Length: 255
Length: 314
Image (cartoon, rainbow over the protein chains, first blue to last red):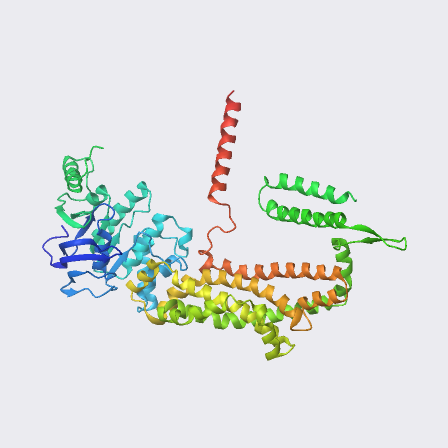
């Protein structure tokens, strides 16, 4: 319902990426084409080494493509930008700063009263009320990732890039965090590009799943997930979609 | 041979056996204390073992000790403690450390941070620093005396020299090893220039910098003693040399003990810095129990519980 017919946010055209190595060249990405609409939740799914993180780094401005173009809002990506925030698997929040100071990182140019209001709002939104003065070392993995999400949301970004953000969490916390993420996404409506190697994670979160194959990384297929949230993991439709993703990844779902 | 050291060692060992199972803070105090008791007793025993009687040509017998016992050392240190010489010398040494080390920190940390952040900076100064670093500060003593005379300045110069290189190298490495994810996050949120330095680069490298300060202070403390033996006429190093010239080996050993104890105090002072909130994250569990120990304790508790239920149920 959020997706609608809104305009194009991210346009990736013919992106190749290769690294020079001692023995010739290593092609990591080959001819990537992808268009992401405003407000869309995209999951990039693939096994380790398929170049999905590299692709996200290129779109996020931390890396450059060997050839091809990446445009956001019709403008080429030249580097990282506070309008587009990256959430890392290792959280990337600062261990020397309190939760409040971490969330306020991107709000330096706002007045103090404004900062305090925004910080309070997002700390509450991610469920960290009462931990404002805590240091990251005093928080669990899931709570740290909530801080990272709050810090990202606080600057009201157009796009949030997430590179396996829940990868370091246990499976129960991961499920909870997915639900939280969906709730926040529906409330704040940013465009999300989410990298994962977890088929269920992709199916539970994404509007469309971009399935990648490894070496060199190519897009095997872009699979739309038609199901409305909350999604029933036990439904026939979910099972079919899951089978399809496993097929595309080249693995049997019945191990 | 006296028996009391053996009794004391036995008591200390018994203390260790009992205290290691007890709850903190008891073992934390008792264990090092017991180890110290064992060390002092072993010291005493080895003194007795190494002593021998020398039969001289005129028929007299002289009891020769190669090393003063702990008690003799303590007795001989009474006078310098009471007349204030020891305190004066200790203050002289610490003053030189404070000034020399302070200068090294003041120049070394900013230089290291700069060279760590700018690749070109590191390329420019690192080879020179790495070439100067292995030259023992002791090797500079002749030059120090030539330049500064037998004065405080000589010793201060040597302390600065000794601590400068580890501080620069440590600060530089601290910046170079900041995890990419912090720098990327900062850049993502638009931090640049001095703000990037103040909010990310400096706090991210601070724990490693403090570690390098600790290391440098240890070296400085070793160097000051050597420097004072030659380059000045006061301080604990001078006290060792002076006592040796007076053939007073009790005082030589006594000075060594004082140097060791003051070294512990200095290290403790720097370690206080590790407890501030903004750096505490950099020292995960340095003094706490390790994962292995924690797991072992858990298994023990579990076993105790099981045997408890078995006995209770049976």
